[in-house]
Length: 145
Image 1 (cartoon, rainbow, N blue to C red):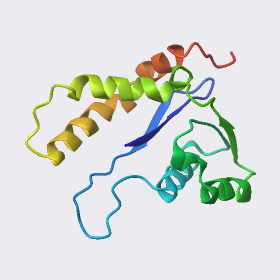
Image 2 (tube, rainbow, N blue to C red; image 1 turned 135 degrees about the vertical axis):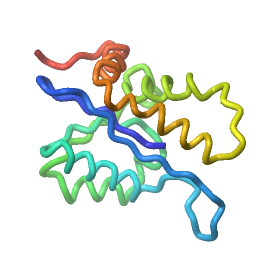
Image 3 (cartoon, helix red, strand yellow; image 1 turned 180 degrees about the vertical axis):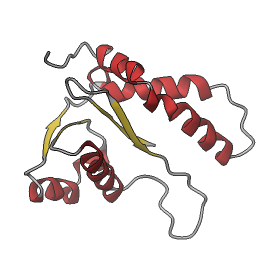
Image 4 (tube, rainbow, N blue to C red; image 1 turned 60 degrees about the horizontal axis):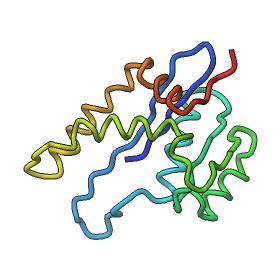
């Protein structure tokens, strides 16, 4: 899973995410690569229709050179800020992941696809901007009025 909580004063909060299910196929990536993160940011830019201020955590894949080069080449719409080394308390997306994990933690799944369906079902909280707002409030950060 990869996701972005998106906030803009005067507009409803948004959750934009991607889920990948690894099926063990030849040449299939096991996780998200830098291109997947780039594509998620581009999708957010397209859906939100404007410049983005990206507050990026220190996931190793977020720090790779090709992703930095992408941001430099497109400097007109993304502004990137790096969170301190370990600061999940400042990242509203961590609140989203906590809510997702809470409900699937006791799931006795027969296979990976059942877990994927449960995660996608829980991510329907994207339609509940008050929950997404609560994840920002949980960081102690606020948007300007």
